[in-house]
Length: 155
Image (cartoon, rainbow, N blue to C red; front, top):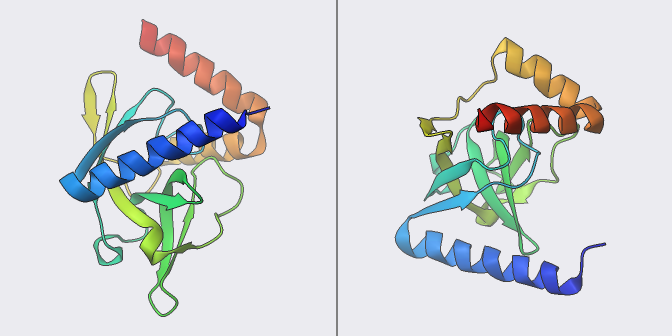
């Protein structure tokens, strides 16, 4: 069970990071979640820049904030009439509930991984789609993939 103190601390960190992004126009954050496997892995660092809804297109990887939490997911579509953005983590079985456009904080410009700077593709390649499909269906497979990726990074 997650303690209320750790939830509060995480929320405060997210608020400080969001304010830093708004003021400076850029931010680096280290990833801990698995929702964007195989595009983004735990331990990767994301280089973000501020973004407006007009700056993003389907396929972009964007940073949203809802209820004090950060979500870095791929944009599926924008609904300008309703001021909503639909997104989904590459390893998630279902899209997120729509984000209000005002919840968009930024766009992932680069992923820093193993000393490399990678610009995220707007579309997954065939191998990534196959792995993503497997990870969406099996938490066990996701755990194995994360462990294998960690071992690969260490060598």
